[in-house]
Image (cartoon, rainbow, N blue to C red; front, side, top):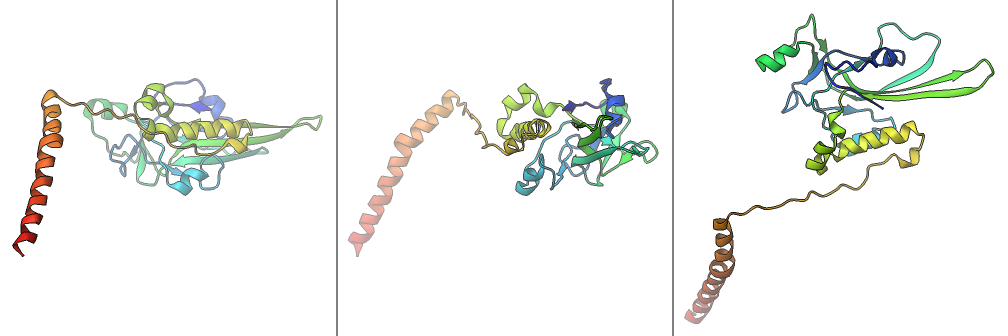
Length: 231
């Protein structure tokens, strides 16, 4: 699994291009998202890794992702299949001007420099080869234009939100290992939530639960008794 980042030279671009996965030098902007730097992905409904995400309408949150294009020249005489596991709609584009984001804080699509969606955010490939001796073997790979979605600090901070990202990653690993029986969505974890109260808040809780609530119940009972007695 190759986890990439926008405007970061990984040294893997040439290798990925050989497998019909060309990392773009951009960051994806999605106008549909509340945070334009967090694109809303659409999932391949047929591929083993993502079909359950599509069925259950689950999100994978990506923060500042780059797109992964197909190579411009077709790969001839190769039995290579590619799937766009996650992609944007046509409302997104690949922003190539980093200064516009970091310094100006505003983005606007440049039709001459930026790439219009749909854009692939994650892709998978499988290539079958036969040696001169007649032996068959496969090459399989998954590339994602973001790595933040599986960072420990992010996942531990918001487990229920980010668990789907971990599910996508684990499904990718299991697909590469050809352990299809393990490709699934695990039970959702619950968040540990702590309510922080000030001393004034604590006194208010005690007052309401031990004084105000019993008085209201007593008053309601007295009112009902008086009304019945009046009849």
